[in-house]
Amino acid sequence: MKQSILEKVCIYLLGKGYIIKSLSRTCFDILARKDTKILLIKILEDANAISEEYSYEMKKISSYINASPIIISEKAGNKLQDNVVYSRFNIHTLNLGTFKRCVENKLPFVRRDHAGLIAHIKGDVLRRKIEDEDISLGLLSRKLGVSKKMIQKYESGANITISKAFKLYDIFGHSVFDKVDVFSVSNLREHDSGSDVTKKYSDLGFEAVKTKKVPFDVIAKKGNEIILTEVGDKANPQIKSLSKLLDADNLVIFKKNKPKGLPSMTKKEFLDFEKANELIKFLKEY
Image 1: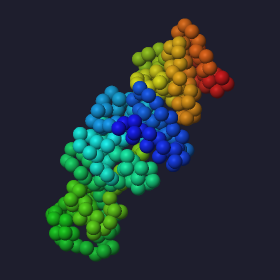
Image 2 (image 1 turned 90 degrees about the vertical axis):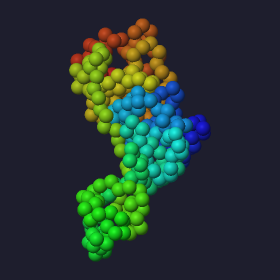
Image 3 (image 1 turned 45 degrees about the vertical axis):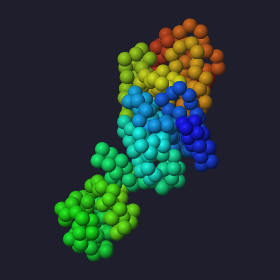
Image 4 (image 1 turned 135 degrees about the vertical axis):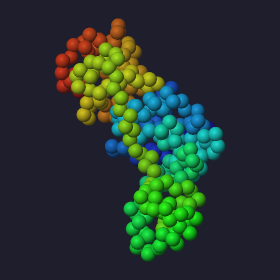
């Protein structure tokens, strides 16, 4: 099932004008880009199967490349409902049909949390609707089956259960609800100075962190400059196309044998750089 969903997602995104890179044995399965919009997608048969470690790596990497981490699955124990956004370790999780509608800018307003299916009300829009249609709080509270105090909470912006949300929808339509922005960019930006490589990047003015479950060992960022760095003697074959899609540079810090076809240097050469622009110039001129 996972392979089938992956193929459908790739074909769909290609049809929508995205450039895609499919990866294997990593914390994400698809990297997709259209203009400045970047998606980091994990495909799972069951969303409950994702580990906290994989989720953490997805969010961390997404924050460095300004990407939206998304999990696409058809179930999480039970079948995922259409037009509902779920969450796994704070990553938006949805089925394929809902994902397609989101790409077409038809964002849902229903999400699932520990309390069940809920929606969030746009308090200012609700107040304006109440005033424009001259509906009293008493009448609205009776129609929804809640207290006037709860209506006042809704006017301030609050979550509403799905059964009440449908009643409110019948009265005012969808504009009173906040849509769930499944394409929000991860803000989990962590720094790591625990290794010689990340510490050197930090000294050069980069933000840098070690990575796992991806084709590179360190990701570094300074302004719009992104460097994907491998430490070893053999470059991952996926790194070149990955960096090209991201408009990033890549670097291999080799220990013994210099890899072919990629910018590379010894660890000593890397640690000898004194200015960030010197390193960037080296990578750009390669």
